[in-house]
Every structure is written in structure tokens, then in C-alpha cells.
Image 1 (cartoon, rainbow, N blue to C red):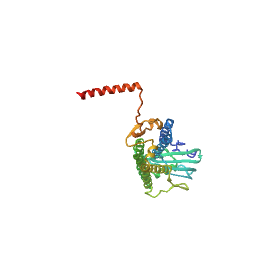
Image 2 (cartoon, helix red, strand yellow):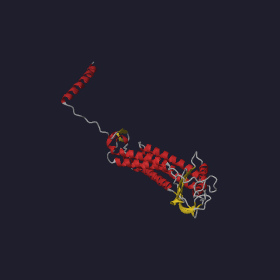
Image 3 (cartoon, one colour):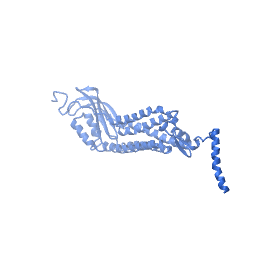
Image 4 (tube, helix red, strand yellow):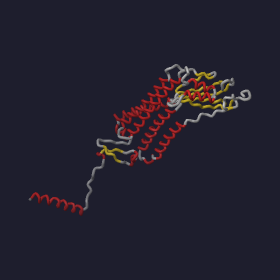
Length: 346
């Protein structure tokens, strides 16, 4: 059969591409929905506090979305090469293709795209994922890939990350992925606590939790870098070229977000020491010695209650009474005083 066609018997024809991971799409959709909801109610906030409130909401949602997205992203360590290589086992036919490797916290993603896509009477477009998250076995997924008869470049790269590979990439990246993901979840919890505290009159503690959020993100990056550099790099030869990996977009986005959280936390700590009134004004709060919570529709309504000290509350004013009311009041006072004088006389 192989002599009559271009496909060997154990290949079941063109392979469907790996389905798109919907986790990132769900995360982005949730945060975009929250952002749109806040923008819809934005016109209800009057004055200059509208801009401050929008800035706080956008920044907070961006930080939370990044922490969640990079936890499920597969672009922590990436590499791509264009080469000429064999396409299938037991065949000398070669193809020109772009091979991509993406290593995430939960597994690897391998792409094979022909240049052009249509070669050897079939479409060369593969996107295969192999995971090692808890409850999933990388070795079993690699065995299923062998049974499916995936192209040689995909199987070659996937074999480098198997537990039995002499490269040791499986234990190296699997350990880094598990602990980095755990640290990022701690950073996400700190982000939640920071949002709760910043909505209350405890801004300094909210700044501390925001600082902790950034520090945990930087700690996750440090652990990932150290864990992935414990062993010398394993050469990945594909045809006449060698694939080299480097830090991907998820790594750099996490670094930028972590530094931003650290700077914001430090700025809030400094502002609390030097300019506490401006810091409270930015968060639409004004607290004195004896705070009384009042609703101010001009400063954001129920979404952002304003705190005023009692000293700022309007003092009671004497309202002049009419003459008839004054005479009635004086007669009432006389009636109250007369019995007292009679008692003293007795």
C-alpha cells in the first residue's frame, strides 16, 4: 500500500489539530465582562473621582487577569526553528516546515507547520499538547501519540520530555511548573486580599498586600529560572538545524506585573507616611479622629462611600421662631418654673 500512495498504512490520514485551550479564553472573558460592567456604571460617579476610580479598577483587573492567565499559559519557555527534515518514520521523504516548542507550567505544546502547508498530498499543520499536571500522566499521552502515528518532529520533541529521557527535562520542568504554579496561586490570594483592604479604611494594609502580590510573582519567576537551569541544556536537533529555547511572553509579562505591584505597594507605603490625605483622597476616603460614615452622591454614591469626621459635619443652627411660637414657648417655660418655685417655698 505504501508503494501505491504517499501515506504508510499505520497513518490514518490527515490528523486534526489539537483543540484550542479554552482556559485562557474563559479567564479573559470573565475579566473583560467585569471591566465592561464597571465601565457601564462609571457615569454614575461624579467629579474627578471618576478618573481615579477607573484607574484603580483597570489596574486591579489587569493584575488579577495576568496572574491567572500565566498560570495556565504554555509560553513560559519557547523556541522555533525553520528546517528541512524527515516527515514520517520508515520514510525518506523530507519536508520544509516551522517547528515550535512551548513549555508551560503544566506541560509542553509542539507545533509543526509546513512551508507551504500543503506538501506530500496532505496538509501539514499539527498542534499537539502533552501535559504533566496533577492527575495526568505524560508517559501515557506520549504512548497515545505513538499509537496515533504523529510526525517524526513532534514525536522527537515529545520524547525529550518523557520521564525516561536522558535529558532530564521532564523532572526539571515538571518540578518548576508545580512550585511556580503554587506560588502564583498565593500571589492571587494576596491580590484578592489587597482588593478587599483597599475598599476599606485600611489602605496601608492594602498596600502591603499589593507589595506581597508582586514579591510572590517575582519569587515564582526566580524559582522557575533556577529550577530550569539546574541541568545543562539538552540539544534539540531537527534536521539540519538546532532548536534553542528562551524565556517566553508569559515570563516577561509576569516580571512586568510583579515589578508594577512592588512599585505600587512601595508608593502607597511612602504616601501613607508623607501624604496620607492625598492617598485617602485618591481612594475616595477621608478619615479623621472620629470617623462617621456618610453617603455622598457627589463622590461616587454607594460604590465609594466617603468617610467624614464629625468635626466636618454641619453644626446645628438656631432657627428663629415666630412671635406666636415664642410666646407659647415662654408660657411653657413659666409653667415649668412656677411649680419648682412653689416647691421651694413649701
